[in-house]
Image 1 (cartoon, rainbow, N blue to C red):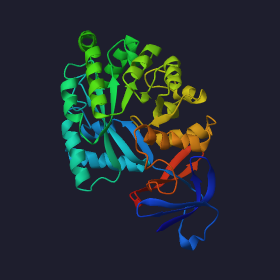
Image 2: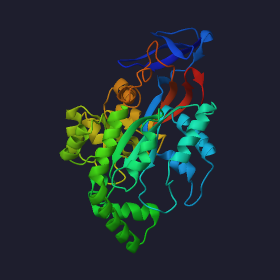
Image 3: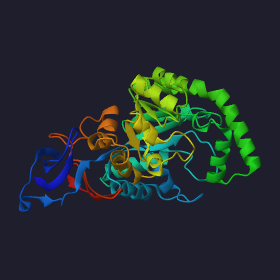
Image 4: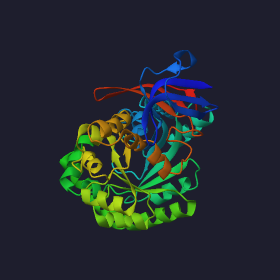
Length: 377
């Protein structure tokens, strides 16, 4: 048995100074009060919180292609990514891999299968320290998305599917000028290339989007896969998500959509980078506004793993959310919404996925990480 003492323990309902014991990979006891330092690991007043359950991060793709045209070996890329996650306190991760290619500049993988097989290989060999699952991000307005998704529909590693449409004039890019700005900045496209891209994507959306959304939704129902909507901008988008049986509304772009998702009972997921920066990188609704109105249920690190615990503590420090509720946005709530009932809270019988955290001002420092009772960072 391993005992932690002198910790500020964050449970689902309270924060108190106390101790926590773990044995055989599970939490064996959680108790308030001081224990003698000689009988355990003294956390010196640091917080002890549940390991982060991360539902949407596409950072693995950047490890696989660190520069345009540079293909890194897949298994080493997965291991480097795994280490980055653990350093941010992420103990369960849904590796978010895109199906449906948008821009051919050599800056992201065209085919997710090599990375999926690398995750599977590293997992089988016991090389991964975080617990990895798959989140397939399906771009419904692309030609081959259904064909490319079918092999994943019955893959036991796939535990979440999101329905995305990043076409100009839609959702994240209602403003086509923002679409042009984003793609020019990310991919360095010329005006002529942007014109051609906008024309092609509009044509593809008109041809494929509705049919492919329906086909992927049907496959998810058949295989019992949780569904997330993505970048909802209107009440009509949220209605569409409800018809698809969605459990999660990822990154709603407007207050109108976020309120509708909340009222329908979807878990509203916002980006922690948005919260830390105080604004969306693409000009959409600030996550802080969702938090202040009580419509934010889940924080995701999105493109910055280190943002997720930082963002959770900012919900408490800046936005007056109780610390138990703030920590739940990165642990208990995401775990529950994807059916992982064995983790996400510090309670007897749950997995001993733990993070030791020190807060200095509004800087959040991860000082120790345990997965299944084993120290991994």
